[in-house]
Length: 237
Image (cartoon, rainbow, N blue to C red; front, top):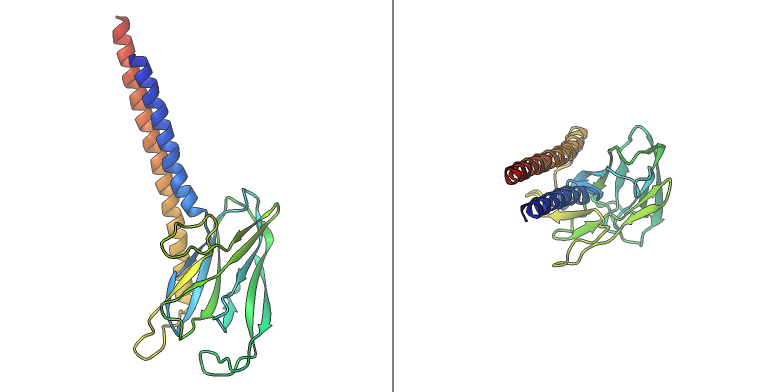
């Protein structure tokens, strides 16, 4: 009876460890954007973290769809990636953040990897956007098509209020109130670098957390196994 109990505890410990590891891995599998919020009327550098491939296959390209509300986009140059853009015409009467007429806008920014990004590596891709001044309280989605050597993944699902997060969520930007002077704060290149560093630190923290969970689970299983062994030895005596 006691042997059965020990075996059950071991199985339970292994299952718990697997669940504890799977949860953070699942959460980190999405393509995140930092910052996730910005003031209306601001110029903000958005950084997208690409930390996995398509079912393990290396990433070859990342196609970011720019929300219809955004009239001005400037991709940030990044070593190892070739950047191309697609433009589209806009209706008459549309103006940019400075009040100047706009005849076309960037609708897609595509980052193509000079060398495919392995599934085991992380990279950060950034672009500067002019957040619409009249978008306060809105959530802007940036759907992404991730192409890999084998297959692709569309991160284009947007959850409705009150619903659970979808399987392949699109990165989103929540638009807050403009500052007192009617404009947001523009991100400098230094701020963009700081955001990228913070995102890298977040990934490192998740990795360290996973490692800690693994070590803790192993220690628990070993302790239970030793305890069960001692009980069995006593029974034999």
